[in-house]
Length: 225
Ligand SMILES: [Zn+2]
Image (cartoon, rainbow, N blue to C red; front, top):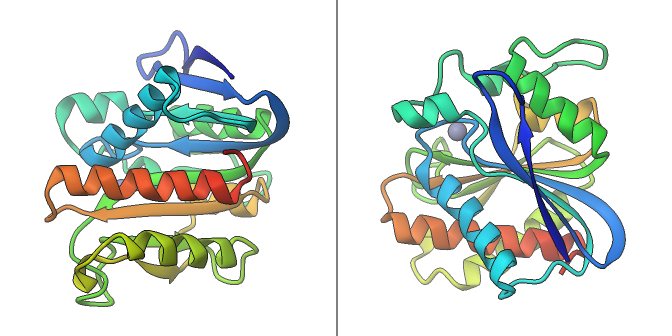
């Protein structure tokens, strides 16, 4: 396993590190992004935890290539805000359409150049989805009718087994969000695209733990562990 650091949007004010981790067996590329929204702290911490587990060898990538971007929107992160404009509305909506922000354009180009087969976007949201279906906290989101839905169902089932309180368990949402990284990865790159949302009202250790469990299960579904 090799870990190499690069810079996304290099030479611009949006420059941010990303990591390419290659397993010893060639395979599909899986992209993980966090910090598209700068104030969604647990997703960023989970991305760094994944990186340190890989560096320390407590997690080993056996097959394929992982592209990890721990903080996409670094200026929003520094200011502790979601980001203006909302970067997750600026990705290409259709094939041939350009991203409407230079940072999402760089992120999308990276995913396209690396031939992403999986695209996992880590987020946080308000409310517990098991308490009220309108809430997005504790959900995995995929586009309706997509081929990754069975894998998402398996991941939710496995992760929920480790969460004793039913209210805090994950649900599945099937929805499209044009302009989001997930939508662009799905509809333009034809990747398996999933958004992970933990709930802001839970303690940060719980959120990081849940994000980490979801990530590990998704890497397993992609045949990378
Ligand atoms: Zn978000």
